[in-house]
Image 1: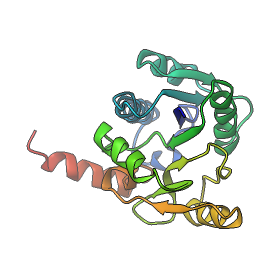
Image 2: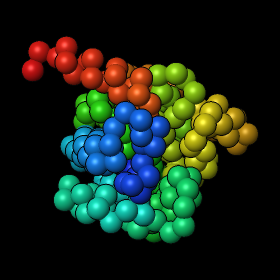
Image 3: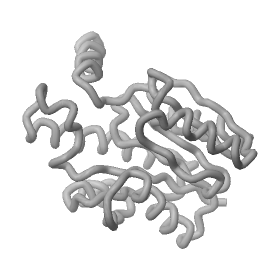
Image 4: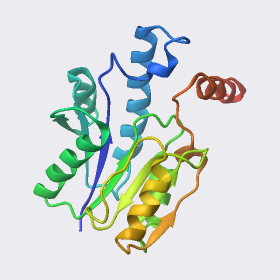
Length: 201
């Protein structure tokens, strides 16, 4: 049964609004595209991922997805969860039976971590990779692809846990710095800068 990855991306001129006091609009756009590049590259390197769908209302984000071999999907309407449901339908039409949903702002995601996540999820219908605060969800594996509906947004980790319980789906939680660390706030950006400045390379 093939597994598709879905990566949703906001309009670039609206993305990372909480960094508006720290970064210029151009810098925020560059950051989003760099983070997207890292996530798609990590997914593309995994032999466990059959295809990648990047769903976005932004043509530039979709063009970058194509450059990395992903399937571009122009988002209809607005909202993160509707975008994911739209991409899920496209994956279903293409024959996918399982999904990996990954947010596009994970600077430390690698192919090795993608493989570890998917291997750890093999025995569960729903696998969650929470953020470092254990409140949000940065990655979600669904086996089958409609095991639960997506509930990304504020408090999404508990919302996904509740959704799995309501549908009596087996649940696994995956912990890794690479999936837990996202970049949304000035504190996140400072933490990322600290890590990168301390790296030997």
